[in-house]
Image (cartoon, rainbow, N blue to C red; front, side, top):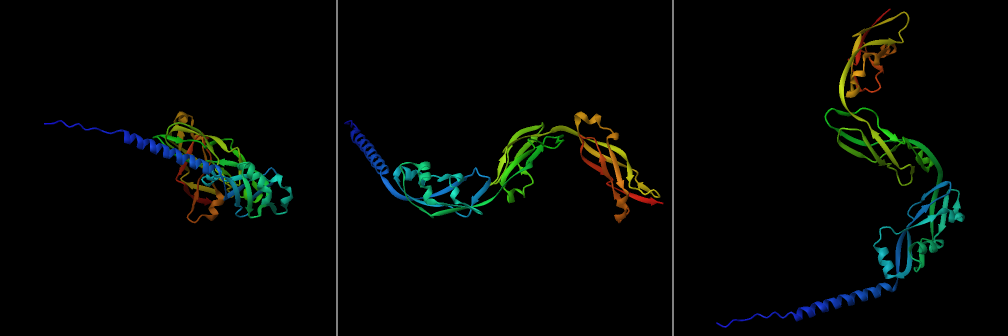
Amino acid sequence: MEERKIIVHRYPVRKYLVFLSFLALTVMFWLMNKLAQDYDTVLKISPKLKSSLSAVYSDAGDNTLYVQVRASGFFILGKKFSDNNSFTIDIKDFPEGKHETGMKIATVNLKDKIRDDFDKNVLILSIEPDTISFKISDHAVKKVPVTGDFSLSFKNEFRQYAPVQFFPDSVSIVGSREHIAKIESMTLSPKEYKNVDKTVEDISTITASPDISVNPSKIRYKIPVERCTEGTVSVAVNAVNVPKNSKLVLLPAKVDIKYVVPLKIYNSVSVNDFFAEVDFDDTKTSLNRHIKVKIIRHHPSVFDMKVEPAFVEFLIQR
């Protein structure tokens, strides 16, 4: 039987690949040549303010500029796909536009600024609208406390035993007088901690609206965490504001104060660290002859205190 040989002709495949490479290079050079040429187009641009004056300026509506330019295809292509088509205006460079309630800037005066920020080879043909406006409000500085937004879960027997400490515990905010007058505190960005079994020390950033400046913007904080246990003391209830001709009889005369305390200082807590009282004046508004017991003094390291019973019955003897 005659043996047949299969011959693979490789040369046509090579020629095909060479042709494709040549075609790709041709297209690339054609595209580069086209992009190097100048074209007319309209760009949407947003002016951003930088003010070193003693007033706070903000946009009065939509100040988007529609700028007709003549520029290279490379520049236009880059701007069409950019998420940040903006430039910065320093208000001190336009003192002639300032008036009592704000300022106006003729956009024809922004041509050089736009070209310098984007590309000196760009030719600006026109800008619409012909004017942009900014309103003015009083500049003010205010110092406010820092607060946290923490979500914590603890390992068994561990608890937060003291308030969060912030370093620093307050910040300076700068903005319009009307705006910052409503701000009583600044809150850190939310943080979550799981299965905590030791003191947390971390850094977070202040959450603020864009028209508010915060200094400092980053805050270090400490969340005290310890292994804790429960304790109970039985204390006598004292009465205050009792008239000289009256006697207040309480039933019961003692209450239990239950509390949580770090395990390492449990033995240092005693009944003498607590003081409970009732106010005779509360009897005047009582409807069921019971008044609330208040803890006036307690050990500085105990927390989550509960009084049992929270209300005691009273009798007035004259």
